Amino acid sequence: MRILVTGANGYIGRHVVRELLEMGHQVLACDLHLTDVDERAEKQEMNLFEAPEDIYEQLNRPDVCIHLAWRDGFVHNSKNHLGDLSAHFKFLTSMIDSGLKHLVVMGTMHEVGYHEGAIDEHTPCNPLSMYGIAKDALRRVMLLYCKDKDCLLQWCRAFYILGDDKNNHSIFTKLLEADAAGKETFPFTTGKNKYDFITVTELAHQIASVSTQTEVTGIINCCSGKPVSLAERVEQYIREHHLKIKLEYGVYPDRAYDSPCVYGDAEKIKKIMLRY
Image (cartoon, rainbow, N blue to C red):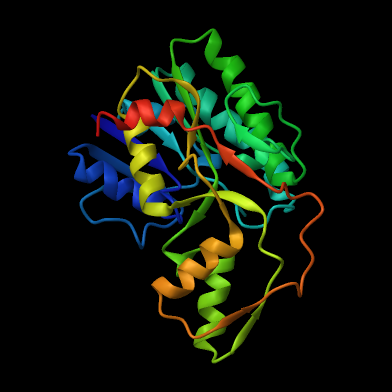
């Protein structure tokens, strides 16, 4: 299978490329720069927002497009999320109109906004950040667009990602930086809120698995399905990485818009992963 991965040089993208290659697929990696992409992949450096109308033909008609490209993903209230939205729509619809039959797009729990409990494909969405609003809008319009087209759509909704932490901007990155700087304590919230944590390698494996089957479609939570408190997961991380730093609980208040417990319904992803 020939699979196009956009945003291939990004935090998630490089892991997805590697997973697909390990599965034996032909991978075309596409990004502005491709310095960190597995050498086994075919590479195409380009700005997809400036792509010509025949971009599908120029990319040699891939069987599947996994669209991970997204600017400022770690800056949730960047204006670029909404500013780039029409460019994402133009690229994806151009691919579909030219003959793409299978599209996979990266989603996020931030589409949902405040919610307590399990999130499934029917959970109402009321996003509370520019990032969430833009992803929610893209999901809605692509689901609508693909209804009348001969193109299968899978929307991979991610939750709380960790791993490869020198290349993201999470609390785990900040912990590593603080420990490396010799700091003895790390200011923290109460840590009581519970989230659905997944390593970037497991997330990549799930995305690759979703993308190489066609039975399960629509919104698919890429998740563990298990709520774990932030304090428990961070303390575990400190132990796993043999960090000397100690958490200083209660320095920061819990954010008012954070749910006390939110996680993904894993029914659909479990069905897919039974094959792998």
